[in-house]
Amino acid sequence: MKRLGRRSVRAKVLFVVLVTAASALLISGASMVYYELRDFRQTGVHELSAQAAVIGLAAAPALQFLDPEAAHEYLASLAANEDISSAAIYTANGTMFASYSATGQAVSFPELPATDGHYVDGNELVVFQRIVAGGDEIIGTVGLRASHDLGGRLMDYLGILGAVMLLSLVAAALISGWLQRTITQPIAQVTSVARRVMEQRDFSLRAPKSTSDEIGLLVDSFNGMLDELGRRAERLEHSVREQERAEEELRTLNAELEDRVEARTSQLEAANRELESFSYSVSHDLRAPLRAITGFSNLLWEDHRDHLDEEARRKLGIIRGQADRMGALIDDLLRFSRLGRKAIEPSLIDMAELASSAFERLDRDEASGNLEFRVGKLPPAMADRNLMQQVWLNLLSNAVKFSSRNEEAVVEVGAIVEEEENVYYVRDNGAGFDPRYRDKLFGVFQRLHDESEFPGTGVGLALVHRIVARHGGRVWADSRPGEGATFHFSIPRERPDEV
Image (cartoon, rainbow, N blue to C red; front, side):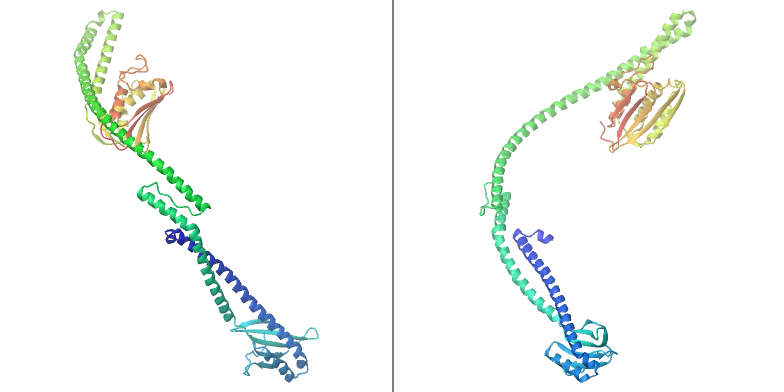
């Protein structure tokens, strides 16, 4: 069938016509041969049985009067039937009473007769039939053997069938040739024109129309399609030329934009370096006066607190607390400014062990009740260990701080493995926040709670965002007031180039 699929339509039509004709002839011929052979046997059995019945009626008196010569005379009359080769008459007790042979040789009947019926012995049909007298008295049996050349008859039929098939296939081939001239030849012409159009890209070619039937309609449709393709090809060529011109303009514009972006990027990098140097210098330079404020306020407290009234002590406590807060802000700013200059040194990290060790380092004295820490199954991450430890410290510190007023505080760490990244999260059952302001969480000095409620500098989450972003990940949070918060961050499963 695969070879037929590669043949031309003409060959396929010829094949279909010949196979159809041959199949129909074979089926009808086989049915007729089978019917004729079955009818031949039934006719032979019927005729031989009728002959045996006639012989039985004629030979009945001879059997009753034990006159074998008369029985021989009746059997000799079978010579008129050339198909009967031998015959025999048996008595009621099974003894052969008389016999007949067309060749004069000994008959080939058994010593005892068979039951009523017939069977085929080689090329001969054998029939046995009882001789009945007086209505129901069996007085003997007649046996006849006649020629029954079923094989010869079959060969005759097959010869006739072969001749008919040959003539039919010749007629089918002639019909197929006519069909090819009227059907396949116009299709072949359309195919030839289509091939030339594809090879030469010449849409002015047309297929000739020779009929007004469905084939003619196909040719008209094909030629109409060539007209439309020609018009579209012209429009497409015009569009390609326009597109090439636009692409050339776009390349020129992109080159100009790349130059501008490169210049602006250089300026931005220089400004960032200057800003980081400035913030580092400012933070470092602020330490000296801050140390003086802290030192003198501590000396004032130690040396003169007994001479100060309650209001002076309160104000001095505020100065010392704000100095400590300023020191924490300066430390966070220094860490934030150093983060942009530090190179990432990735390694495979056990995130469950890193989260647990970070939790152990936290100051959990602020918790007013029991604090339960749960660590789920965390996949390892390819990241900078020190920076990831800072991420866990800041997120866990937030979770402990904002759930510290619960009698039964719960801090949970888990992860979700996705196709391109691992998503880690820290969940608590603390104060939560208004989800409308979630975008402000990761900016520097951005706070959603008052300092009097939950102390902090507002830099921790900005550090988390910057560290995760440098690893090619994302940071986000979900919460509702009074229902706790969940902070997520993702790390790509294959670390991209350092940003």
